Length: 195
Image 1 (spheres, rainbow, N blue to C red):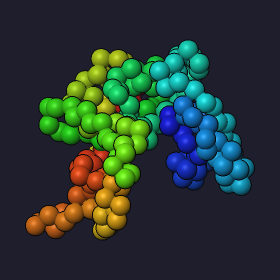
Image 2: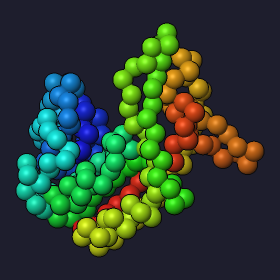
Image 3: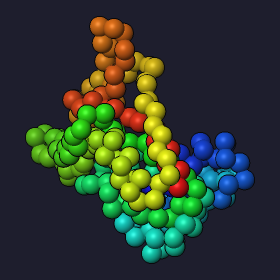
């Protein structure tokens, strides 16, 4: 699991993928202790590793995993290509990705500066990528098939009181619910890549 943090996604997925051994990788080990306690409590076989998203093949070897997950990670990197290439190299089965994608032929590279008393916190990325370009990249790097499904949110969420980034929803005149974080539309896709 790329971007594992404290293992919340691993905990949920382990209910479906029973008897699976997990490796949770993140660039920071801030939540690993919490994750290890959670995995022990849920009896999930998981090992957390602090590591570099761009050196997966070097650290794990080519085709070392049956399933590889990247959940809510790629849109927060400066660009996805190098990290995605690494994900594809270490999988011998499937790569599953959730991130922000558009059906328009554009990549939107956004750097977010949040302000507290008008002082900017450290900026971070909130990118939306062209799905067709992403799909073609996967196919050019060994994928046999790339399938995608749009995520449709079905709950109402109020805007954050602090007027910074934070998930909220807006209903259109056709009663469709759109997800935003601050002023940015959040077009999530679930993607399955068969290697």
